[in-house]
Length: 152
Image (tube, rainbow, N blue to C red):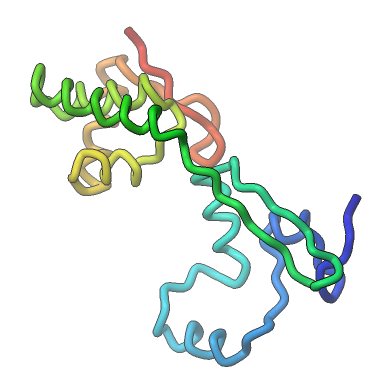
């Protein structure tokens, strides 16, 4: 069911990046380049591309919507951290660390990999290119919405 949030804006339209300017002062700052800007309505689309599990709830009476971002369970985060630490001890090669992280979570983005390893996104992309050429890593489906496949 698609209900109105405000001015014919539905949750489905919001997910697709449609927007309704409710704060023209903020928009004017964005237009002047004060804040990072990728186009009106692009924030939710970018967030969904990085974390598809985002949940939206419609509050029809209040003419607003609620967004809930569920974190991974703490145990799962500990396992990823332990994997990263053990990978660092057994091999200092960035390629092995990337493969270890992607084996644990094939949906990690290059930004997440860079953050986890404490290196730049450009360095991650370079290593990923090497791994692809070596036949140790491949991308399944498009960059947005796809996942990594670690090849043993």
